[in-house]
Length: 99
Image (cartoon, rainbow, N blue to C red; front, top):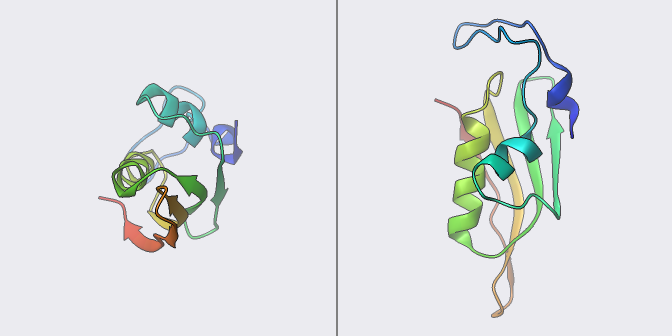
């Protein structure tokens, strides 16, 4: 799955994780009906998750960021996704804070 799957029994000011392991971004996106194929997730030391890869449209990009922001232990999302919608490709990158 991903590096986020290895965090367990961790607490911070926002949320306590008591069930042993935190679900990773791929499983979390699948739970929300989004196929994570083609996406790459990197957990940075500052608690931000960098998401890169190709998505269909701006709506999918926003949904992915919102879902990842809501994950335990995530401080924010660095969006390095590229939108491919048949009319060309454009960079959708932004940094978003969780919460």
